[in-house]
Image (cartoon, rainbow, N blue to C red):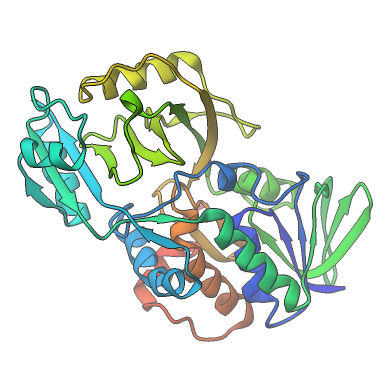
Length: 357
């Protein structure tokens, strides 16, 4: 009998396991052959402290010191661009990120292919960073294993049942038993809850797609900024000598191994193309992942009010890596009854009890 059984081997589950392993025995069950296969393996890999709503931003800030200590951040500037009719969206985005407004000409000195004939508004931030998602995932996996956690891949939860002293989770290789069950299943979080007899929270998987392009005009993209449309209709960033463009899509889908829709990619590239002087002539590859949001777009962390042995670590949306250190510490504190290191109002805004069911 383990103390904690974690369903999900993405950044949420693995970071939770690392924190929980200091307090008891832990086993992680991951369906796929590798950790971080779904949303965690398809992240935009950025740390933007101003990204997300008020609750998410607070978790970002609380996670920043750990990211610095672990060494997963590399500075990258952040550029917001807007065109005619996007003034309100630009103002909102600039304020949320705390970016400095600059002229389109100044923006073009930062992003050389910017079409200043289309761009009417721009803002710049120098405190963003690339986030090494693989290094962070492996950091938590090493910590978890060093503390005695067992991390199993190719171990889908085929059956979940409540027992008098905890939970029984069936897998193809046999059952696992634990006193507490941690639901870190990403896009499958509500399905896991229902299988366990726990009411779902309305966590919805939304598809987000990405296209990898050759470096525009063969230019060196290494020092280019992360570029974000003011209305969030696309974003772009450097990637190992190439150039990534996302259509910023949020299409509701069922949980599955996501792939990009060609029309969604084409429409997103057309929106991006309005701001770029260099035509898109070739797409090297495309992919998609599922960002799973609770109804209020904040994470869900803590004990289910109907059964305190069932813990949620879900609803990461597009903020899983950014928030992982603080979110995992909070989960462990709530699971073990130790005082959280976060403000009480922030903790309350993350608890599953905030949802009427």
